[in-house]
Amino acid sequence: MFALVDCNNFYASCERVFNPNLQGQPVAILSNNDGCVISRSDEAKALGLPMGAPIFKWDSFCKAHGIHVLSSNYPLYGDMSSRVMDILRQFTPDVEVYSIDESFLEFKGFDHYDFESYGNEIRMRILKWTGIPVCVGIAPTKALSKVANKVARKFPKRTKGVYVINSEEQRIKALKWIDIENVWGIGRGLHKRLQAKGCKKAYDFTQLSDDWVRKTFSITEWKLKKDLEGHSKILLDEPKNKRAIATTRSFEYTYSDIDNIEERISTFATSCAEKLRKQGSSCYMVIVLLSSDKHKKDLEQHRASKSVSLSYPTNSSLIISNCAVNAVKSIFKTGIKYKRAGVIVTGLVQTSNHQLHLFDAENPKHQPLMQSIDHLNSKYKSHKIKLGNQDLKRTWKMRQERLSPRYTTNINDIIVVK
Image 1 (cartoon, rainbow, N blue to C red):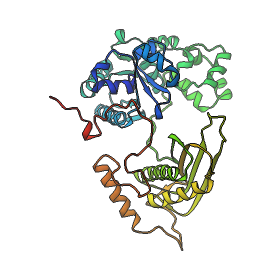
Image 2 (tube, one colour):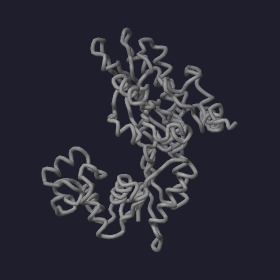
Image 3 (cartoon, rainbow, N blue to C red):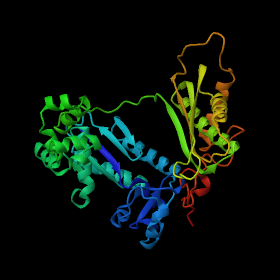
Image 4 (tube, rainbow, N blue to C red):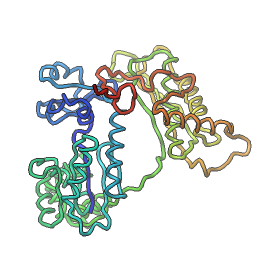
């Protein structure tokens, strides 16, 4: 059996844990630089606030309807997500973290368990220990557990947040209820093709012949169909190292001077290097991206990229940052107002097992230095140690005018009980 555990309105729920005044109130969370709405509470959805709404257009609407609008508090959300995932691992060792707010669980050897009670235990423990409400869908396959989770989310009073598909009758009933476009793995293009075939519900998809699905689509769609039929073909994903690592961000403001852009590129490159070291990888190539604000049509536009190949693999922040800064200098144009930049490291190999270069190699002092920096930054839960050309006060320069306190990751923001 599989379970899909999904946190309800996760960003808004994290805010409500530490600010109970938001309970039952409409809440909206904004994207980077307070741009667009990326998360809404059920109350905000009911008022008609759309996902992706640019806040400068909808600000008066939010004020008129009493919607609490907050900046994204990623340190808080990331920490709360880790707490939820750690609790899930207490119920089974087989956990696939699917996103920041949902995970798949596989129950091997749980043949005689009462899964509805087990699902309720999962739900209540997470709620009690973190304050985050979740819904649990349990079924014989991953795809069906997604369907079961949607049933639990749609009918909270009837299901109490937990729904189990453990019979053929329940499977067929659920598939006849859910629209084909709401099925996990059915994208916009596939939805149109299935709709042309007469598939309106998930059940209609399962009635198509296996041969036709294999010939018309691919093995992925066939596996999804078999999963919905109750035959497990989609397995838990094993944790894998990434083939490329990217850090891209929009700037808080447009920059036309090279100094600010160099600082941002150095910070992005350092972030990529840290991620490389975390997964035990090194890179052979650094790619730098730089672009102006495409929304300001009246200004001169410029987009460029630069690739730098290395003669030996590295995960040193010093080397990667230096390469990235030199690259951005070569593509920077005077007079352009830049809004976005990024650094990508690729050509990844294992740090412990790679081809050595006969005449060129990394300074042997870099690795122990990087280990010390990582240790200190991990110990103090913030980037205290930085390169000299980085901003010493902030990691990301984002507009966050509505930011809530970092209740669990900053000692100065911890709630004081009086």
